[in-house]
Length: 424
Image (tube, rainbow, N blue to C red; front, side, top):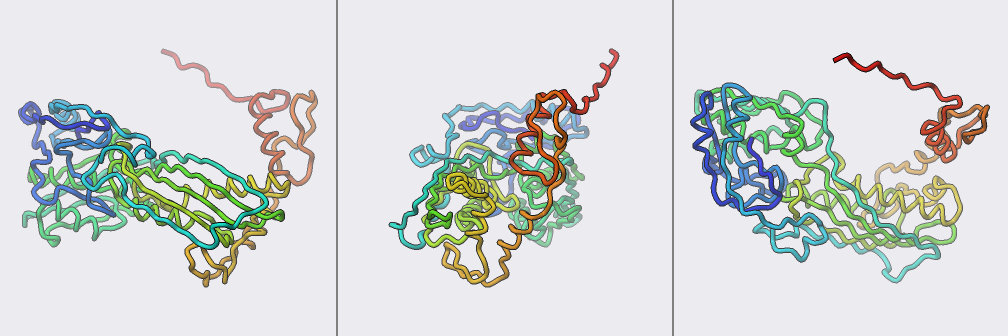
């Protein structure tokens, strides 16, 4: 695969003649060789199979090469000459609201306001926080790989990992300009819904090359290609304000959630709905005012990763609960128990919880479960490290002693084994 080295640029020209003339090269495909729909996407079909006029993120595919040997294919891809007019990228999602449209559909993918209760409600205790959740990638031991085999009827069989073989078949058929019956997806393994091995950005070029060459084509991505080629978990900016009474009971939660969708929408609308819906966590909140946005930028695409949207807000609202506990001087677990949701409570969305919700029981069980003994339970002979008393481990004190002792103390810490340097 030939990918863009720029996050934002206009494509002036693409010259594949040198790559096509190389010995061992069977096919070179670009946007001009896509016989069907040039766009794809799981939630919204706005992502091109190959960029044609504009590249919107670093690593966007420009062309794909099939050759008799992988090294020949890589050299041929490098021989494709692309002339770019480099443009200023939008990398900050907060700038996306005022920036020039990066896509024909604009920069705003979805806005969700969630208002529940009395906006004038206020608590005796108020804590605020600004949280930034970075881009995450599952990075499995094995990167993406697949095999495409032409069929006698002019169709193609795709052997690859998939969580939605019927959806993958329909998308591939639309891109190949074929009836769905002439495209067969053989699931070689069911991935963990982590956006990598199920990304159609690898499947579609693979099938196009098989159809063009008339031969089986295999693609095995390197780690760099894997990172560049598939969607990731949404980077998120979160602003929170929690109101609580003097006992730690929540009165109101105010939040602003901004999801960086990257260059294309994918499943960002659904991820935002999950983030807003779960913004207050498993706690009873009588008044909630949440604003959520998902926007396009020139960053790598974000998409469906297990627990999409709910993971980012979890980090924020749990940090807020810890701040409330610290301000009141009580156990963080106690604050959570006071506010724990149960069956019959009403969510900020207005929905009543009718299913079992043993939040308090789980919190109590986790809090009461004995932790393992801390490695630093013996008094220091030299007194250089903070000693943790014997018996039940105290979470905070143990964590601090562990970090301090193992970082720099050598009085009784186990000696690290060192390997002898290898001979030249």
